[in-house]
Length: 436
Ligand code: GLC
Image (cartoon, rainbow, N blue to C red; front, side):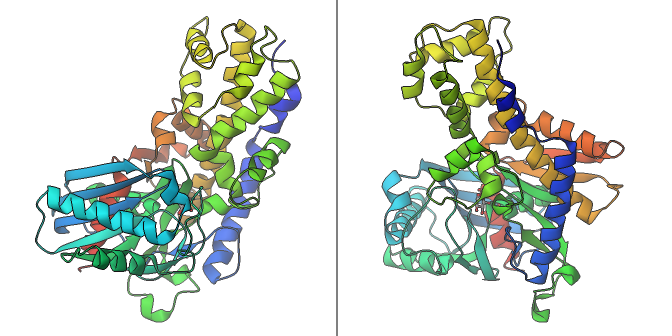
């Protein structure tokens, strides 16, 4: 007995569905750029491509979904980026869900300690990488539209986050730092790759959350006031995690009900690291309850255990004949006896859920690149950052398989490059660009 067919059907995302997604996605891109209300953000970044000649020492703060980082970065002026010092900390739970004021005070305090520890006393420009939907009004400021992922800190939505940071720096007595850029992590990733190679066409994040950005011809950004059309192109933060024209199944709906913002971020909840583990767990728990998994008697132990997205990567990496790695994993969870069929089902469910995620991501990439270049005649480089892409053994290959199905003649023109430290170092580049 294998995995019930109806479960499998729920997670299929076949070629016609990918093609439909591309049509809907491109429609929303177009309408969003005209200023119409769509499910994605299509937000202007007020940042353009770097030249690669930007030079000097800059600071970056990187506030993402899970961690907070401070970086001291040197740009060579000849396309080399050196992280001279960095500090990372997991965001404490109470700050993610408490008062926004405390969150910003923590950020400022951490930066202050970093400066003193690394003896940085001279005036420095800083790029704030803030990985949430922000309506920018200038390169160095913007308003938080809503929290995403699982942050809920109060008093931040609707406020200018650069201003909140400046105030917190002032209150903490940090005087030698100027907040000169505010960017999304996708934009930072793009900048980091483009600084090094100049041929990046997209920034992509597959981590706790998911999102993509790309440089758009400013003529095509209908909502942009003429005074801002100073560059031929501007990077657009698509906020694709919000894309809602995807058919959700019953498991998706159950997952959604237990999130901090039900009904929002449809695509993100099908794709990103914050959610995939939970989705797999819902499916597996149902199989346990229906006595289709762990009939040997350890089902209760499995029901009680936690299941994370990184467990998916671990399970899918086990290619041994006996699935002994999966067995080890199950034993750690208290499931001391499992059959080979149980282990196969576990691996199969992980594969179904993460394969759908990879194919949705591939369709998003395909939509953006084929908007820029309809026949994909030119080479395109997608700069990727994020733990899901980095740690999952098959996420990248599955995206490439899906792109091959979509563009049989030209998918070879699409390259993915891992932008190492992209979202952090890109903040420094944004700060450097702001000085042009
Ligand atoms: C969420 C945020 C988005 C960010 C992404 C990846 O989707 O809304 O701004 O880029 O996560 O971190």
